[in-house]
Image (cartoon, rainbow, N blue to C red; front, side, top):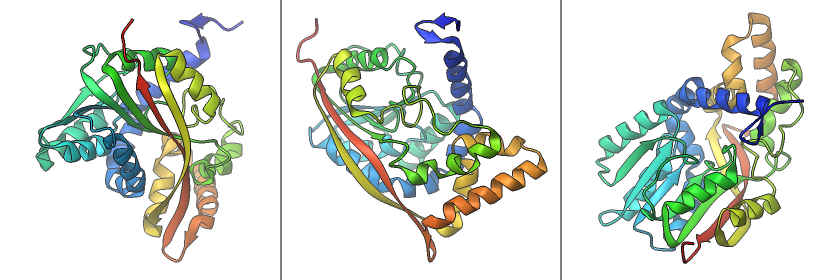
Length: 294
């Protein structure tokens, strides 16, 4: 039988350790290199998320899984001069890039913390709102993570986040793995309950996680957001992002060529004229922390 470590199968723990290292190395570097492109692609999501969060008039916001800082900086800009936004992430390459962006923009009300939000020792009640764009799906124990984050927020504070819906509903986001998975011996789909991009695809599970971790007034609403990128950027995106971007540089020449050809063919259907287009099928999640602390 597999050994259990803190309630998690040993192989899952190893997967998580590898994932953490990836964000601190090759995957984090890819996000930094592609930051201008990714910001353009996900700008419609950023706008929807920030508007939803700002509807509650926060002054001090925590951005969970802030990455290279796009959402943190967008929130900080909207909150200036009286409010602030703090981003937290495990990826030092992405955080260093985010700090450089903040300095360049003169965003003195944007700060960045290095750490795992599941275990970070936040000052109790130091924020009045939490936001996250695709940052909450990677916790190994999500109930513990959301409880810890909840302690960082003042009573009655808000949680607003975007997460991906299912693998089946996001054909662009899964096109690469569908196409090259068979070539690389990968299984058809990831474990739906394992930490990862689609870990929060099930709204019933989301509801259970949030309520178990002390959040109330949970609302989970489907949103379908049109996204685009230039045709000239598509190949770079497909070859650098996700699991494919992690393994492609290490393949032998013949395998590299086969995978590259499969990627090009898989993404061709999303291109019309000079633009790649897709729908981001997401859940918009909102919740409030308990009005009193036990």
